[in-house]
Image (cartoon, rainbow, N blue to C red; front, side):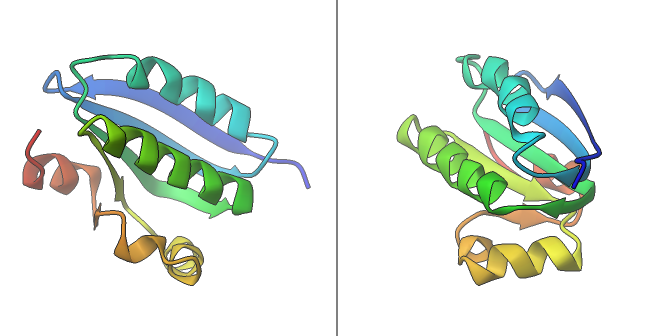
Amino acid sequence: MVSTYSLSTEIIRTSFGLIHAGGEIDQTGLPDLENAVKPLLGNPALKILVLDCAALTFINSKVVGYLVYLHTTLAKSGRKLILAGLNETLTDILSLVGLITILPHYETWEQAVENSKS
């Protein structure tokens, strides 16, 4: 399977990191996701990382594992990971492994930013 995906990052309100992810991300695209996240994790002003999944159609178990890593890493330093725009497929995947009850999630990234305190 060839992984077709898109990634972009931005900083909002100084303390919010936002990653827009689209398409299908599996182990082929995971290194690019890790590289997109790395500078955000290294930013001491960043308190909340929002992963906008509105255009994301699929993730595999490696990406799910990376989300667990991100959640744990951020939580250790008093920061948090928030998901936004989950479709039914992604909600089902995250429900199967119990992440849907652990990770905060909103319908849109704008709602995530508006409703989260940094």
